[in-house]
Image 1: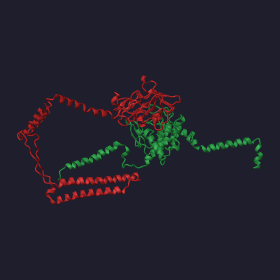
Image 2 (image 1 turned 180 degrees about the vertical axis):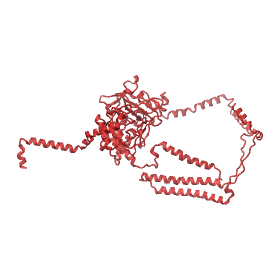
Image 3 (image 1 turned 45 degrees about the vertical axis):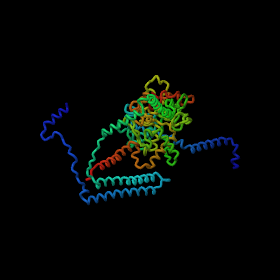
Image 4 (image 1 turned 90 degrees about the vertical axis):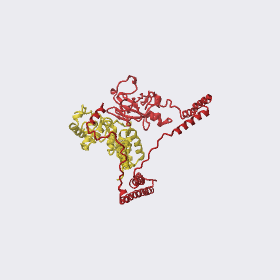
Length: 265
Length: 339
């Protein structure tokens, strides 16, 4: 203690103090802001980008062009961002199975790591929406307020196409809004930020990351509760319910009427 | 022509056996039912009917048991579902059992011989008809309607005036709609805000391909927010302005390809909100009316007759999107006074 006090006025004491302060600040920052570092999405290594380029050239370049500049067969991928690649390839919509009004979903053709590599390559071409933070992807099923808020946001922004409980619905000329039941939260988030196919973009100014998490929570809630009214008939509303009543209900009435009109043997 | 031909075709057949006219064959011979002929069958039918009535009684018991076994206070959805199911089955069985039993009883055991009840002629006798005419003529003569013109005319006048109070009372039911249907909350300087939340929108936040569901910022201050929202709801879309047809009348209504259109369908007023980003089509979910945003929301399919009205917008000093005026035409479906 006295030794420290003795060296207090040493000419190098100021330099030492400055070094200690700088180190402490740096360590404190590193300790307190890890999510910020993660938000940069574990900066993709050059190997990932190179591996992604190899995969891109082998699987995507035929339609999207050797430099991802696009062609008659497919749009340019410059600026679509990693989120778009993760959504399209991760849900199996790309590589495109067949020419159709809309790319159908099928089993993913690539491993998660390969998808991330391709995403890293596309993201290296030009900035675009990144693969979202884990922080906003957890459905908050127990937070009634967030679920209710998600329901209101979903009703106003999404339900007209995707149906109020996410059962999906038809659009024009063979296109459709796919069902959202059992879809990975990360893919729901990415669809909102990138606006795949017919879907419009819902950027962070329109639906903040918290809003998007509320929507994911609402969809998770819908997935987790049983249908209160009994058989949901696909939750498609008046079409499937009407069909059931017309066929089963009216069928029973007609059978009764025929029996009433028959003579007894 | 064709009927003659068909007769000619019919003629070559064997004409000899066909009579000139067909007589009424009357009712077919009565056929006895099994239950009429066989006492055992009758007994069986009786048992069937009483079984159906017993099923009805069991249904009533099921209903009562279900009613008390599933208390609805503090019940979960699952319990509510069971309660509804049991009550429905019980009540259905109770009513259906009685109905089917009664019909089966009538069909198998009650007499089924045909009985004829001739219809009476509807015309009254000549004496009755003459008497009625005489009564009417006597009434006209005694009241003096023909002779006393003053009485007759003053009665006609009073009767013609009598319905007027009803017209006045009906008119009193409410004011005429006035300009309510043709005006919305939008006016010069009102900011476009997000629905829900009411946060104003800046121009640079509307990125290409975006869709914002928009309400006027002052909506919550209005007296009837829901009614005003139903008229003022707007869809904000950004697309490449090169794609949009040039319309000199609408010059300056958009900013850098950001367009604001009424969200209320011109057919019957559903919210037109299904925007396809790639085709720039807006689809109404109710009756599939389709509007092309690149042609200023002209109707390209479906029952709607008019394009969606466009809201002229600009940017204010702080960078927020604002309306520059109200819609230039009434939004939503047609109505009588719209012309």
